[in-house]
Each structure stands twice: as structure tokens, then as C-alpha cells.
Length: 305
Ligand SMILES: C[S@@+](CC[C@H](N)C(=O)[O-])C[C@H]1O[C@@H](n2cnc3c(N)ncnc32)[C@H](O)[C@@H]1O
Image 1 (cartoon, rainbow, N blue to C red):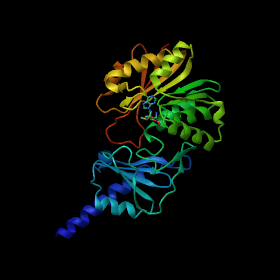
Image 2 (tube, helix red, strand yellow):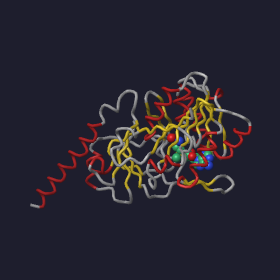
Image 3 (cartoon, rainbow, N blue to C red):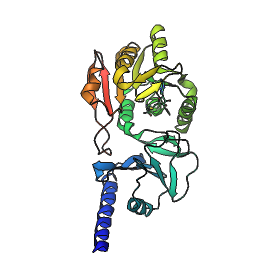
Image 4 (cartoon, rainbow, N blue to C red):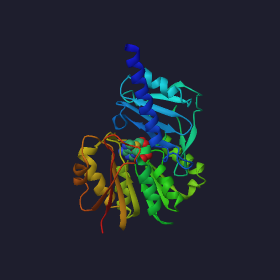
């Protein structure tokens, strides 16, 4: 009896996993290998997030509860499989579970653009795939010669999306490691990074500097972490300081320009977030369709005319 129940629940789990993968078949193609394959409760698999990074899969769990039956079924797909605990220390890399071990750096594709990835360089893998649609929207909007300021740039994938459309980009980040990674991403996509700008330091400081110098950008991307501390120890919290960040960015925007304001902070909803974006016309953009659980990323395009 117990064995029968076990077999039934195993069958159900097989179905959940294979139907989640099937649902995303259209999204994963020759142009895009970076997608979310299972989104926790959104795919009836609470606490488990599976993402494809092209050459390998990454299963993320909150806590140490990677279910052994989930692990067993995923292993049968014969893909290199890595595991990340979402509550682990931010510096820890994913753990290799099975399949071939991937090299320190490899690459994946998003809408035809190549991204340098790693499962060995700490907590993040080189791209936040929940921004796929926003990057594609930016790529379609910008015109050759327009200027794009990508703040909190991380590995610069917003800059890459704009640069392939002919924009002149400025990528801004506190971390030299990520600015170097951004340069690598330019090279991977056959774009000469010397035609683009790289600014190391705090976003707030740079925005004040740009405003003083009367520098204006056609597009500004704001996608800060929920909490950050600048190089002088000053803190930033989405719920308290986003309004100020938005105001500073607005001062560096050309009259016809657009700001993409994002936050993945779960503690506020989209209308609370929009209240911080004062004086602009706002258009909300939804999360990509492979993110089926409760939406957490709030993305708003702001214009002033
Ligand atoms: C949430 S990620 C940004 C994600 C990125 N926009 C993307 O879509 O790939 C956070 C990035 O912000 C950078 N960062 C954190 N605080 C910063 C600050 N005060 N000024 C500039 N960059 C900062 C970090 O180094 C990290 O690369």
C-alpha cells in the first residue's frame, strides 16, 4: 500500500516536472538558452526553482530541503546539475550534484546575445534572467547613437542589449570585477568596449556628478539591490531611498528620455513602488512568462513628456 502511494506521488512529480519543461519549450530555442524551467509554487513545486543556464541546470531551494525525489528525477535528464541554497551566504557558489562539471566560465544565450556565466564565482551566475523582456524592450527602443546609462550594471547585460542596437552605453557599478565582466560580455558579442564607458563607484555619486556636468542620457536603467552600502558607508534601502534615486536620475535624463525603474524587493507592491517615482508618466511592464510564481520584480518605464 505504502509502495503504491510512493509510486503514485513519484508519477505525479514526474508529470509536474515534465509539464513545466514542456510549457517552456517554445521559449528555449536557438536564440535563448537562459530561462526559468520550474518556478516553485507557480509550477506546483513549492520551494524549488530550476533554471537553465544553457550548458547546465541550477536548482535553487530555500533552505537545505532539496527533495531527494526531485533530485533523482532531475538527474535522469543527464544535464550538468548544480544546487544553490537561497539562504546561504552570498559568497558561496552552487554545489555540483551530477553530470559533467562545467568549466569555470562558459556562455549562454539570451535573444541571440551571448553572456559569460559561471557557477564558480559566488552566489550569482552572471545574469539575472528575470530582466530578459526589459533588455529586449530596450534593444528595440534605442536608436543608433543614443546614450544609455546602466546603473548598478552588474555584468552589463542591459548595456550589451543597447549596444547591439547602436547605442553608446555607460555601465556603472561599485565592483571592478563586474565592470571587467561587462567588458568580457562586450567582446563575446563582437562589440568593441573602447567605444563605451565604464564608471566605477557609487550610483548616487555618479548621478550627482553627471547632473553637475550637465550630462544627459536618452535612457537610464535603475535596478538597484534591495539594500546597498556605498564606498563611504552610506546605506540605500529601496523602500526609503528609491524616490531620491529616481529624482537624481531624472536630473540626468534628456527631455525625451526614458527611465527604466526596477526593484525586486518583495516588501512593497507595484503601486507603493510607483508612489516613489514622482512627476513622471509611468508604464508597468510584466515579468517574463517563465516566471509563473507570484511576481516579485516590479518594472516601470518612466517618461516626462
Ligand atoms: C541587483 S544587481 C543589479 C542587476 C542588474 N541591473 C542586471 O539586471 O543584471 C546589483 C549590482 O549593483 C551593484 N551595486 C550595489 N550597490 C551599488 C551602488 N551603490 N552603486 C553602484 N553599484 C552598486 C553591485 O555591485 C551589483 O553588481
